[in-house]
Image (cartoon, rainbow, N blue to C red; front, side, top):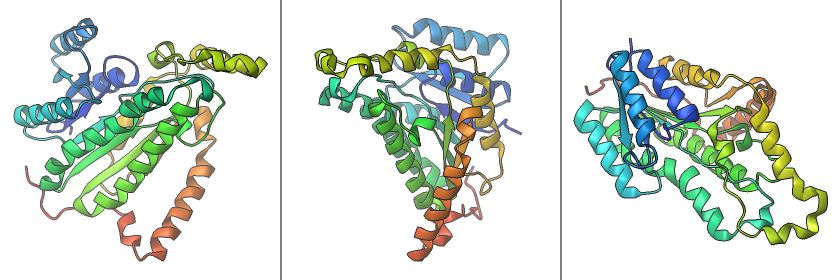
Length: 297
């Protein structure tokens, strides 16, 4: 069923991205698992992925992509299309985390996290959409977070990027639905991935001096998130389910994890109001994916 499907996954060196890539490859997909610094710090991770692919006869390729670079993204997309002939789905997973009191981060640090978490998916989408529009078929999956719906103290910048990502992904859903392209959001809850251990520290820690006990919140929240034992395979399995759903039947948002799923009423209510807003402007037809009469192979 998946033999002809080509998937590009970003941020595939560790965590969700790596597991999603391997899971899809084992399902029969042709997977381009992308990451930064393929010949440097991620060299061993890329080699492990490709060795796994050879050992299990999977169509699994490591691909150099820096989502903060227009050139890197464009070249990678062109390479995938040149080698595989098409891109059926993209999993926008690449992301970084910043934990700390908001005042202690500089504006430059805020720009840096947005470069990866928001502008990165924007770059990837802009690079793949011309190919998908030509074929009148495609799927964009954005790995967000429950932090794209709720906030916690010390997670302001991370939450801001995820809120922005969700706004972009949902708006895109309506804008490209009549072109046979679907745009979805996956919202995992708390899962133990490398993003916690690699969280960037605030550059201006001196500003926390007057916060007292509140200054300990970033550490406590990080410890709590990193100590849970939720199975990250749940996220990869949900991505597979979404890809394999018939076009036009996929939900705009998918909550993954016990805690995250408690927010389903929030998503349901938001969709109700969103539907009403589109109806008020005579745009209700954009809520449904239009199936192309003819797809270009």
